[in-house]
Image (cartoon, rainbow, N blue to C red; front, side, top):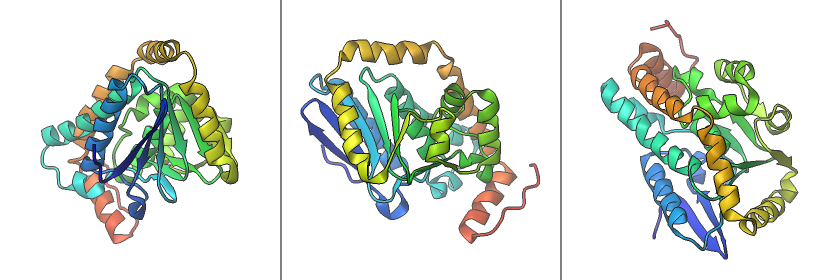
Length: 258
């Protein structure tokens, strides 16, 4: 299968998906979402694949969603359906019955941060930074962020991270339990390969059911539905429109609370 926004590579029992829009720090548009969905489906159906690595090409892991696409949406129903399509892809990844490593090689913000948090093992280079930047554009986290972040760091800390929209450096993210481990940049690819091989050679069914049971035991489904519903409304708000205008104008937004 040919892709234009991702690279898909399989070696033995390990599959690797690399986000491949390095010129925009792998910002995610609808085409990338569709190709990610297709690649995850391919992994799910290939019995020879026993583990999956998701990483980014170039300097970034993923710089979030495509604001121009979001800006073009008309009406809360269309906006909700837009978010649901992305969340359905995330649902497929979270329920994938194979262990997943997200190898975060650089900036991971917004949707990119939450894609990173989908990993069963989240490995970051020292250069990586994370941000739930949604508040800066008048939205709430999607891609399962309201569920994934609170699960990892606790509700109180998750609120602080989300409401501030600030960057969290890789070492701090490790210290607060947001991610699994940080690796020096020069050892990053080697360690990711080693950890991926361990998972790919492990008891695949036991690992798969471990993640599925852990995810099902927490209220992920409601979180995904609420994210789509709320952002479907917020995408039409004045504050989101002002934040988007300011982003492209490289100005500070002037929020009015509407």
